Image 1 (tube, rainbow, N blue to C red):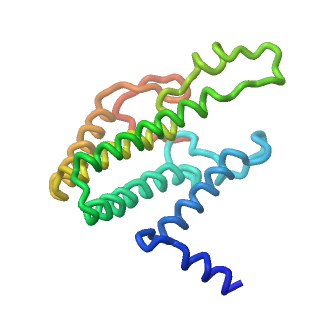
Image 2 (cartoon, rainbow, N blue to C red):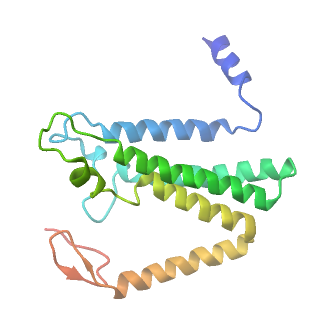
Length: 195
């Protein structure tokens, strides 16, 4: 067994970070488990998203993917820079990857057809209900924006951009009205007390 694992590890390209690949695999495994819990009527609490405030282990899957994207950007850009590729080429390759993620997300959403339901309408039930910004689409957008930041901004400017975005988000949460799950319209409600 040890020899078999060693032979697999020896075939890995030297520029790969095995810890990141392991994290990616574990995150994909967790995503599959969360998306297929067995019975949707009787689920363990860690396999559910938080109702409104707070978090469960399920709520960590998307942030883990975003962390993996960020780490992959630093590794791949540094590798491409070492090979002599300029920023325009790296950005072009990143844009192609982002478009692939967008297209794959839309394809997977539109691919579904319920053959068991005679009243199913692909146009009404799938096409017109398309979630334009699904998970893969959001990962693609985060990827291209993060790639541009990494290529063209200094670490200080990236930190300033993140702080500015968080400040804008805080102001929006304080002053823009939004609906609660029960239908109430509120603004400035950061914590909901449930009884």
